[in-house]
Each structure stands twice: as structure tokens, then as C-alpha cells.
Length: 530
Image 1: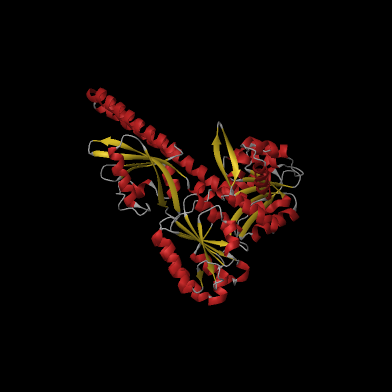
Image 2: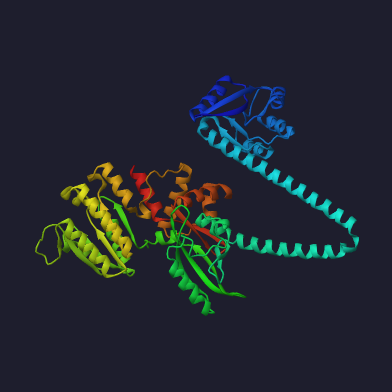
């Protein structure tokens, strides 16, 4: 169902007004538009009724967008004001924004109009709430002041004592608020747990990371909360810290409110209290770093939808050289694969009929299931690459392969193994591919389906990639200089890229630098291919 939008339009062209109205209707809006051309007509329209937004052309025969801004400001109404013009220059636009306009849009790019209106309407609501809060605060302060005066009049003898007590309480409150502000302003996650294993501190960074508010966790025992992946590991760490004087580093896996796993690298230290020893954890989210460096979460099965096996084999080699026990089940010639993975300690199994080359052969699904269970059960740090899932589907049927996958996935999760399965997506039906993707996880660097970015943001991503290819450091100022953009504009576009996982930023000296991620490289490659 479309929603109404009351629009006061300062425009002399009926055609442009009709074009703007049509654009809003295309976006599912039912606009109630009143068009005015003069200052007097605009004043009457503002007095007559309430409006959701004011949209103005910059150049009119007897009026202008700048004059319209001034008219609106004199009324004292806080309405979103957007300039829509086909002839406005950058200097003029800046002047209009300084005068009080909230945004400007070229008539050739009306697709930006509705998002701009919705954003500025939301900002207006926020400003209104802020004003109401300030008024309530002033009212409360005035009321408190009146009460204080009344108390002074009715009990002069106790005035000095009351004032001293009030002063002491105020100082204590300010000190408590200051300490809480310091904790909340920290970019690191700060969590404290008392001697009874109850959470006593949960700062803003912890709220942002996990989605759980302070009211959700404060004074709750960690044994009653489901957010910690391994509660026993946390309890053991707390016990260890209670007897140690030196801080200890540890990685904790947290399940967010949205059921997303986050890896938190914390420093833990003991807090001496009257009731016993508590602990303080200070940490940061290293999930993206873990993904970027290919350190996948144990207990998961990952799908690699690629036509060739380069990505999957390279990842298997990387994981094996970093400490995993590697297993490769492949349809390719085992001798050829042995030469490719010779740098790593990987056991190779042939998927198909025995070729008489001295390698173990897996010829059916029952043997495959048992072999993977054996591999995963032998060592906790086993990583298994199963090549050509599409071959199995075509040979044994999709239903039988999925039954096997369900059992394998559960077994991998139980034994904290790591399974990689490569499939050529072009060889299976789309519905079958969707079922497989629902059961397995994609590699972080593969999750780009449906990902889109604006051209100007894409240009920045390509620039970062080119600089990284030349081993050049890319500080934010370098991006500003290359595209001749303000810091705020560059920061917003980089935030888009970082939110989508295409880049990551880090502090280097006094400046922040940006680096393209594996996911960003994959996105560039697939967009160029398309």
C-alpha cells in the first residue's frame, strides 16, 4: 500500500512538476503536491497547512531557491528542504546548503530524490526528539531548582547540611557518569564479570558488536547466557586469571543476537573485590581479520562454487601449511595433484575407480562418508577438500548426495573439523544449487552475489586495488587527493566499502590506511567479467 507525502513544490514549470510527481509515484509514494511560484504563495501555503518536505527549483522568474530557504527559516518550521535543479553549479549548491537547504539533486538524477527525502525526514524527526529532550531537561532542571528553593525556605537550619550532601552526591554522580562515558567511548569491547560470574560492565562497543543491550546482560550469570560459544572455556579462563597477576590473551567466539559468529580477541585481568576476584576483559572484533587471512571457523563446511580448483586447492595448501592436517579427495590425476600440493603435508585420495597408481580410491558414497568421518575423527585440526561435488550428483543422484552431505555436515560440526567442497555451478540445476548453498557456507571471499555499489564508490575501490598491486600504502588523504573530494565524502564512501567487506582499514602511525580485501578483489574480477 502506497503512503502519502505532502510536498510543497516551489517550481515555475508544470512539466518539471509533473516529472517530479511521476518519479515519486514510481517509488510507491502517493504525493500530495501544491506548486507555488512566488514568495507570497509560499508563505500562505506554509501558514495554511503542515508539510512533509519542501522541494524547490533554484531559478524561478520572480523567486529563487535561496529565497525559499530564507522564507522557510523565518517560519521556524524544521522541514526537509531539497533543491532540485538542472542548472545549479557546485558553488551555488554549497551556498544554498550553508543557507539552510538540506540537499540538492540534479533534475537528471531524480532517482536520488526519494532516498534524500526519507533521509532528511528521519533527520528532522531526530532533531525534533532532541529539542523535546532538551526542553524536558530544562523543565526538569527548573522544577528541581524550584524544589531546592522551597526546601531552603522551609528548613534554613538544615540548608548547609543539605547543600553539602547534594554537592557530594552530585560529585559522585558526575564521577560515575564520567567513568561510564570513558568506558562507552572506548572503541574496544569492555566487559567485566564479578566473583559470582555475573556481568557487571557491558559498554557501547559490546552492544554494537553483539546486538545485546546492557539491559539484556547486566547482572546475568554467564552460565545463563547463550551468546558465548564455549562457556566452559570462559569459566576456565576466569579461574586461571583469578590466580595470575599478568594479563592473558585469548580468542572468544560470541554468537550475536542475529546468530552471527564473532571472534573477539581479549586481554583478561583480575579485579580484586570484597566478595572475591572478578575479571575485566578488553578486546576487539577480529572476525574480519580471521576471514581475510583465510582462518575459517572450525566445525563448518564451506562451499567453493568455482569452475576450476585453483581457489580451493590454494586455500587447502594455505591452511595445511599453517598447522592443519590436510586431506584432498579429487577426481583429477593424483600424481598431477601431488606435484601441485607438494609444498604441504596433504594426503590425496582418488574419487572414482582404482587407477592402479598406489592411491586410496573412493568409489561410492558409503565409502566417501566413512572416509570423511575417519579423517575428521582422527585429529581436531583436520581440513578436508572434496573436489567435484557435481560429479557425485551426476553419478549417484542429487537426493543421495544431499543425504550424505547432511550427515557429513553434522559430523564436521560435532568434531570441529573443517570441510571444503568445490562444485562447478554451471553443471547443476539452479534449484539444486540453492539447496546446497542453504546447507553449506560460502567462503568470505565468495559472498558477493547481489552486491552492488555506486560507480563513484567502485572507482575508489579500483584505485585502492591498483595501489595495493604496486605495494603502495593508501592513506585516506591519498584517496582525497586522487579524486579531489572532501574528507567527509571519502569517509562515507570508504565506510560503504568496509561495511560490505570489500576493504579494511587500519591505523598506521597517525593516519588510517585502506587495503582491499580478498572479497574486494573477487568483486572487481566478477564485475569486470560481467
